[in-house]
Image 1: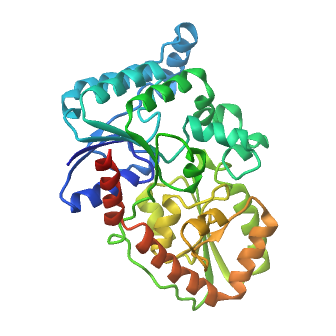
Image 2: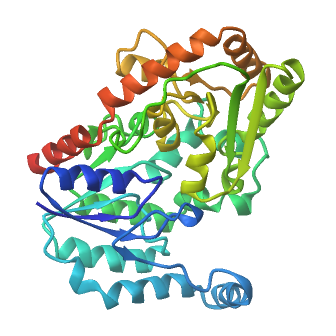
Image 3: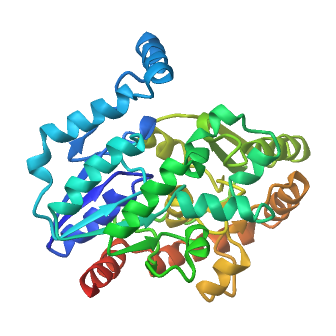
Length: 378
């Protein structure tokens, strides 16, 4: 098959591409590099007029005319290479706003793709109209909406989520759903809002290239190393504030037993190297299931504090921990960390089970086969 993957988050489409290529398919990725993470794409798009004095001019123009210069420039970049994005058997969008454009230009790009390729599919693996709607309607459940409603995140720093509550993005959502063959969820957090949706094709777990990730059996001969990688843009969305407070308590409680590493917004490759020596990785607190960062750490054999709710355990028929379910509760996090520090054999055991779980449920070739099965069925 000839496959066009639109957009990149957390290496999802790159891993899927590798799996599909191993099965003999031709795959092209069009999109951005996902900021500082700098993931590779075949056709790169750039957000222009997005910083410095040009951004100030852009904001002024938008306030006066409602015209977004950055969206227009992204559209122009697409048009220059539009002949490269036709004739594909499958086009898959990573999001309802894959091109980061205002709905007017987003629709123009999508309309071209829908009209010039055979079938289109949508991934739900981040914020979108239905996911955001579900989270605001159910504020008691774990989601990134919780810290916003608590006042931890300023409105201007939450616009990437709030935009999906606008009427214009609801219309964009409707336009996409009318033109796609179906929507696929990448984990439980995106599965739950889609249950009973007529366009929903089911959950296909995140693909992980386990061949590229070496399993490192955890050996505890000296201090237990705890790692927290902070992305400044998602500090409160990930619950990093709870992790930092918990680590302060743990450091004071076990000064001779632990070593703590904290990084802030560093490139993906550098980030991976720094956490290699860790035994325990603190990922996020507002999730039901694991995202990419957690899964790659689990594949290495780390003990990861992340989403591992009962719904996740039930879905995968788990009877033993493969990760530690994190909650936005400092005392709870301290208790969970304390137990592991005082019972290092459990760290080793969870690390082994984590790798086995990723190999079984997230292997990139098996996941690519699942995508192919769904794509071909419609």
